[in-house]
Length: 169
Image (cartoon, rainbow, N blue to C red; front, side, top):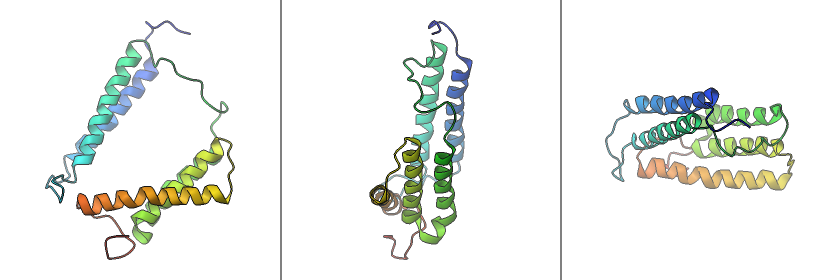
């Protein structure tokens, strides 16, 4: 174990990277209109919150790296090599979401993304699961995606692709 006075350049780079991602989101948020919606919050509110949180976290990570490194890090779970089947499942979820969001709507495409990502994580953790895990993940994905859709479309007045023209699915 290295003494606490050592500087950790790779950890510092990770912190700087997180801060730069936050800065990039902030720059992107500048181009989003700030006109407030139904709840008095504009569509640029959440990007600004995420940008501020990422820049704050990046700053803390750099400070931590420069003052001794990420303390109390646990050993990685699993082997020394990446678990590629899990990566493939998670990638398939993201790609399916991007490909299907305008066809089957936000709720179903995000729920599908959740199901496939959860499958990848379950396999990486050594939990094969069966039909019950598929059903649980599907219901959980729907229970997460539906309120997010309704919050964005009804309260923030942000247009997201829906399955129907009613605005509720």
